[in-house]
Image (cartoon, rainbow, N blue to C red; front, side, top):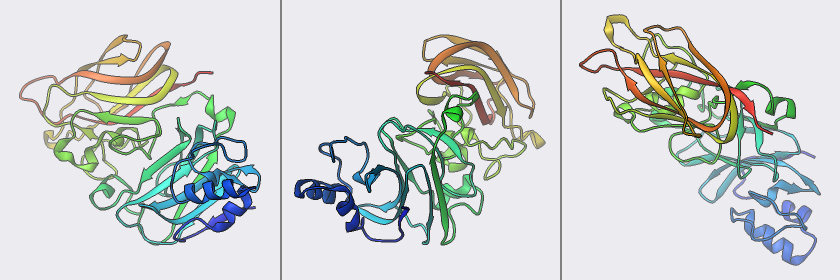
Length: 322
């Protein structure tokens, strides 16, 4: 049974009928399907997120498009959900993804024009604010526009979860506090422009021979000598390699570069690295270590006065810890 209730103002009553086995449970489900938290186990099974994970006696992954307390559309499936939201996005729209308790690794794609990636949900919930207006400067011009939006989510296979891969990749990262990982953050963003936010450095786009809007979005912190950048994995992972793509718009000397920086890990260890003035990827390998985040500090340019240096992409390779 595939549940898909597109563009409805609230969750369908049939969810409560399918889930609840007595009056108390029906009242609890009616409350939380309007957006409230779960106060106690439903049907003798405690769930994270909303009760819509429990449908027809089976645990399910749920996609919702919400705006405030209004559910504009939803779909659910046990393992693989595809939802076509047949409406233009407006300010305040949020794509809400919930998974059964324990299903913390999902393969998600919030728009066909951005890459899918494996995301980690500590609380089995992902709230993705749909980018609109100036925020779209960092995305493919077709992304999040129009009146048909395909959203895909599926449970990650164990072979995918524990594969050696780029653990920093997350095209669905957003600026500010979020409840899914990996997540990038920095202490400064040039002119607060979306095309220069930290999230751009983990979106999978390595184009670096220009600057500004897509496809040259990057993280830029302006002409400063106190910049820091971090990738937070949300849990301990084991890594052994970092690859950096420096922005390389060297035509007419628009860009400079960082000739050195320190990489700090959550175990308080530090790895100094030297960088070159190049558009090519620069890779640094090291003995595998467990860490929950990677931080770039002491970013040094080769000369004064300071110019514009930026990071187009960072890749952090390793695997999940068991």
